[in-house]
Image (tube, rainbow, N blue to C red; front, side):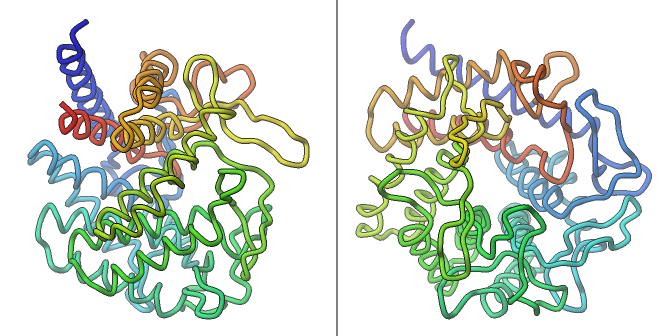
Length: 401
């Protein structure tokens, strides 16, 4: 088939999929009783109306609806972005200490007031996108206020980098650990999403302080978070950067590769570009070598101690692989990356999409025998990964054509 014709087919497929993702969320996800978004919707589209509502869901969804409204010039999606924004202002923003809460209950009452940096990052990410859409200075000022709190209260001025979580008043960093089994003071994911959020914020405001913070994040990846010898990302570390990682997550290789490159590019620094170009390609190559299946899908992780490959296939990893492959192809013009991109998309169409109830399954249908069914909506599941993959793929293909 003529490559130009095939590209047009892909562009139509991405546009259609984006429309379907938006339609599903507009139909199912908005809480008509209490406002905002439902906190949990099951794989079968069943709504848990009593579920807590998470800040990750709101920050990421604000980013998505703001970005897709701008991408499609849609007044409908703009109004959805506005409703999410105002719900966040009313229920998630800490008006006393600044920043955003981790969770509220179904009626919007505070449940967990911890200042997880993860959710602070997505607040900045969503608010920056909302400002790009609306030019609402209140949103930009709020994003900058959270940025200033992170930089003044949660940045490690001794060892570099950022801790994981603070108390509500931004104190207690010496005991700031995420409530999981790793007990890590610093985690890669926090740094990645701060870098991602700061990049979006810099695009919105052009502040040199934000540019400096992006450089700081990139330096953390260069010195501490990218294992240059083994070509993967260290996930969990001590305050002074000793590696405590129990596994490597292949989807992070892809996600990090293109988000780091985007951060590098906005700074327009050739020295940084020359340093990071081989690093991000190595992350993609490592995943291609050991973290992918015969259908072109991305596997979950590799556990170091047991030398075990966890072969589950989560939706977000497949979405990030699409962008990671396409970004690598743009950098190299190497067809192996374009083929990886096409295989990722074909896998999603065949095994990740819910062809009956809409949206994407948490795990692929190939995993249903061994993996529990998970949510369509939750604090870790929203249209951020798959919706973004459709927009990024569409825009990048258009620019290559």
